[in-house]
Length: 216
Image (cartoon, rainbow, N blue to C red; front, side, top):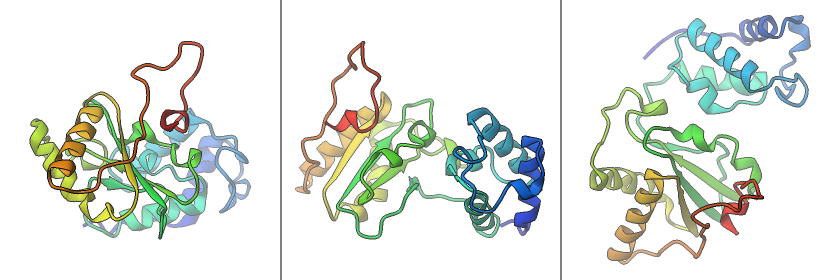
């Protein structure tokens, strides 16, 4: 466990340096994108500098998707006072009593970052759960699982306590295969199956798919 401490003023100064502005312009609750005009490239630069300055694992800041200085400070404080994460579940917008949960599974060479920003496209009473494979993203320190059945076992154990309400799976490439195998596993064990959500194998050429369109 690390004991590095980060103050909100240190973060404010760091972000102001990237933006080439005065620290007082970076208020605690100013939205990075909407009020400070921080695009994806600037956010990547901020994330890289924060990770280097405070010893945060690579990609952890970008993965969190904080939208304000206050959110970023709270996230870093929690990261720097706890053990390395071992859970594959990432909930970008936790909901205390969701009407539904959607589990999102990334492709073989990716991480949960594939679905960064999806939560804002869904109803506020839905909870999105991004599943991270060992050896990827926030779980880089864990050994890879290169067997499909073992990976299904791993994810099944993680999501089992969360299947107490309507749920669904969405996966890309390898993630789609794992979602299919998870569904088969649940059916064999007599568990409830996901509702009839689905998406076409390819999106219409004239349309740009969005997360919400994928579930219609």
